[in-house]
Structure formats: structure tokens, C-alpha cells
Length: 236
Image (spheres, rainbow, N blue to C red):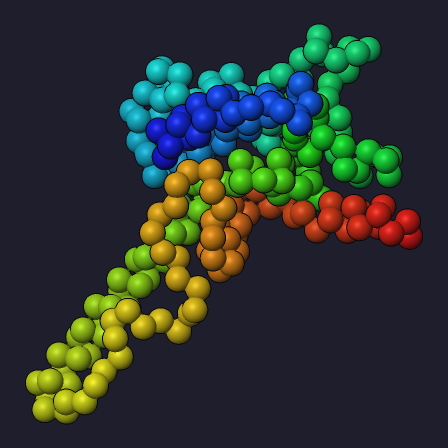
């Protein structure tokens, strides 16, 4: 996963900046850095899928942003998009980025505002913040997607074993008959093979499951943001 993210970052850096704002060309750098660091952080602290040794290795070899992870451990910074946005030296009047202002405290004109450097829509803590802070595939919680996928594959494997046992019992009793295929599934939403990093989860059920997994650590809903955005567009 980390190698795939590294390759994607390399490709993004090589892409042409034609038609982009100067600051927008740096968005993938900050966003992939966030997603890569968040993946390792959640796999260790939230889902306990990697060991302390692996986590320390990632920190030591700078595979993740140690400074950003350190901020996530502090109250109020659990969803911080980048350490750049909280450095008052980077903004006028000694303030921080607009993405650090909760949506409920913004004016109607600022509801859809993004940080010009990172493209973040809002990384402040609290209820009502956008779940996907970038609004694209780089804001997706890859650790939750992977955990949901592994859970789904485990369920399919258990179902296959049960079907094999039932088929064996029917054969032993001389029942015969055509049984259900071990690949049959009541769901029309197969999770398929593990996707490359940085892509959307794919199936709607996988996406919903990954969001439920992530909600155990991050319960903010995007409903408020979407409602406020629609209200702003309609002028109601």
C-alpha cells in the first residue's frame, strides 16, 4: 500500500500543471502524505493490525509524516490535514487556515472554501465536519477500507466452507442434486480484489462498511456539510 502511494505521488509530481493554479499543483503532495500517514496511524492505533516494530520502522524511515501523526494525538487536531495549515507564519494576521474553522462557525460564503495549499475542505474536530476532508480519493480512509474488505472476504470464506460441508452431508446421505455454487452470493456487490491505493472503495456496500468501521474512531457526519452546501446553492 505504501509503495503504491509512493508511486502515485511520483506520478502526480510529474504531471503537467497546465490549467491549474500554482497552489493547486501541490494538493496531491499534501493529500497523499496525509493518506499515507493516516493509513499507518489507523492500522496501528485504531485497528491494531500492525505491530509496534512495524509502526516504529515507518516513523524511523520517514515513510509517514511523524510531525503530523504527533498532532493527531492531541485534542482538537485529530483530523488535521497538514502541519502547514496551523503555522501562523504561513497566513496573514497570524491566523490559521480556513479549513481549521468549523463549518458551523463559517459564513455562508465560506462553507465550500478550501485551503489553497492543501485543498482541505475542513479538518477541525467536532460534529458536522466533512468525513472526507479533501472530497476525493485521497481523503478516503484506506485502513477502514482494508479492514472492511478483509472482514467481507472472511465472511465469504466461511460461507464457502459451510456450503462444502452441506454438500458433503448431502452426498453422504445420497441426497444428490445440484447445490448452490460456492461463488454464489445473495449480494450483487462483490468486493473483488484488493484495489490499488488511492482509489475509491468501489462497491457501495464496501464503502458503507468502511465508513462504519471508520466511525468507531471518527463519528463526524458529512450530512451537515452537504445540507449547508445545498442550502447555499439554492439560496433558501
